[in-house]
Amino acid sequence: MAADSAKLSKNLMRMKFMQRGLDAETKKQLEEDEKRIISDEHWYLDLPELKAKENLIIEEKSFVPCEDLYYGRMSFKGFNPEVEKLMALMNPKEEVEKEEEEDRRMQTDVTDEEMALRYESLVGSMKKKFAKKRDRAAIVEVEEVEEDVNQNVVETNPKRVFLKPQD
Amino acid sequence: MFSCLKHKVGEVLLPGDEFSFQPEDTISLTDTVKPEKVICGPGLRRSGDRLLVSKSGVLRTKQPNMFWVDSQQKRYVPAKGETVIGIVTVKSGDVFKVDCGGSEQASLSYLAFEGATKRNRPNVQVGDLVFSQFVIANKDMEPELVCVDSSGRANGMGVFGGGGLLFRVSLGLIRRLLAPQSPLRAELQQLFPHELVIGMNGRLWVKASSVQQTLIIANLLESCENMTAEQRRQLFRRAAQGAL
Image (cartoon, rainbow over the protein chains, first blue to last red):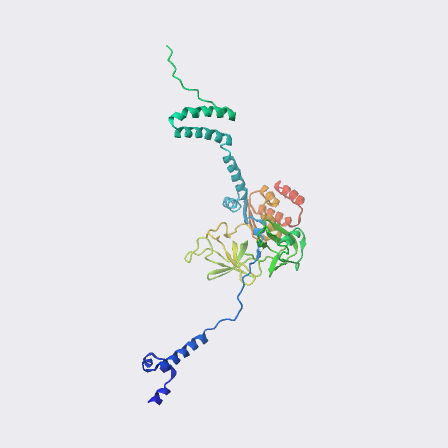
């Protein structure tokens, strides 16, 4: 019987239902065999690692980006209005300059002087708001002195007094 | 790195000239070493770390780091992104073959038109002119054209032509026509109403309100090829007065 079992093929012995009857040693051997087969089939390329070098030269085959060439459709004196619209769309350089000019004008709408004057009064009124009632009179006095320092001609409201109605 | 290129700006280069970029010997302590990139346009080609000149002409530059060779030629080589005038030669299944003026016919998919779907085919016949741009153009592959931009709109591309005249000029004249602040274009603007389609492949299509006027403009443009600015100005003045 023992001689018969030795003749059974390896593939047969590897099957699940045959392994129940095997002893520990043959089991181990079979596993090792299997492992070797797997590692033999796993292969890799014996190459040095590729080093990616940064490319400092970029090629450009077309003249269009070099010379900033215009779009190739044009119409003159309103021959084809659609194309004229397209020209304005595809070659928008001249309009950019105009917009910039407008921006500059917008910025100078409020001059620095005007802004300074506006904030001057704002600072004063905020200060008054947070001061105690007793200090308010003092603040007004200080402001009058400061105005002289700045040498700005700003209308100062004269103290309001009750005007007697004339009879 | 590109100081050697800068020295040569405005000078004539010949095919075979080369620039090589050695790393600089002196290392500055204050600046952080930042590799400079160079964009080389037509006429220059990269070969490893060297830059080879492949066309004869004058070296030009544009800020910040663009260099190219300004050369005069008639042969067109397709380049990606350029817009050209093509002639449809074959209609087969789902692609058209288009003669774009290069060494090989370009293919143009029927889906690459504005509003085209599998059901709704564009109406393109053999012999039609198409204004289209290259999406694939390299030396190893068949060039491919499309008639839409990246957002799927035509923007002036597609089939055109009918009542106009198509002719060929040199590539240099095409670039002169398309250059920003082109004096030639300013002079054309003074003439009667007309329309131009300019392909980077040297094809030029003109249409005016009558056949006579179309022919006048076509002849003017053809003769612009070899004229000084003064001669051209005189010719255009005579044309504007109706003397031609």
